[in-house]
Image (cartoon, helix red, strand yellow):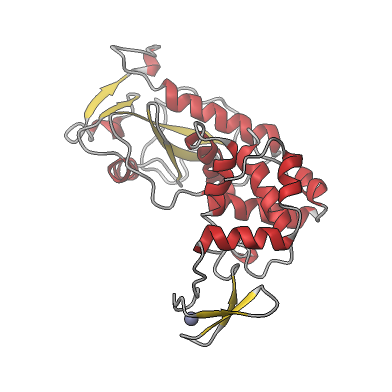
Length: 303
Ligand SMILES: [Zn+2]
């Protein structure tokens, strides 16, 4: 794998659409081009080098079919640079800044940014285990909401325009987040059951919803409303650290984020957090490997 010393170094290496295309072919297929429609490897490269014809299903395709780059008018070298920046810049990048760096419109940059975020989403997250901290936070609104004792469970829109995010982190490991409409006992229970190995130690605050998990997990709590932050090694400082990172990243770069896009921003921050021990170039390569699947503009903008 090529090591890049700087963004300039990266840009020099991936300076044309063609070079990125070759890299993408290697990343997706290795040395065996594969039809995205029928998965046949019995394919022929066209003389122009870009396209293939499939002897299995008789369709033509290029390496971008079935990826986030399909039908994009933006050349691959701009996608690549955007991906490199988003996966490696500690706070990500605004669409305004990205537009000026890539020489594209802000609207295109906004779309590109969101498609890359979608690509960074963990589709099959590994289960968390050992020592896991779970917590909730609220996005939007003005109040700090440090204490949640007054939160009302299972009410629709209980939180006056705020969007709740559930999250958990394995100490020393990965974080998982989920943007939800409201904080419900069932929602919390499902989220934890889906993401944490039974028998793990679960650290939470005193929110009642977590108490129902005691039969599957070793459940330890700290009582924040009584000013308790660490009790017998139990704390939720790691997940709270992630919340403040997420909020700093979003506030530092983007002026406002609507609830419908919040999960994608959270996935972007989680991606960088989860690959924090990995070198920059590897983070980029890993991101490119996730390019399968498309997110269309109308999906992004629908209310
Ligand atoms: Zn085919």
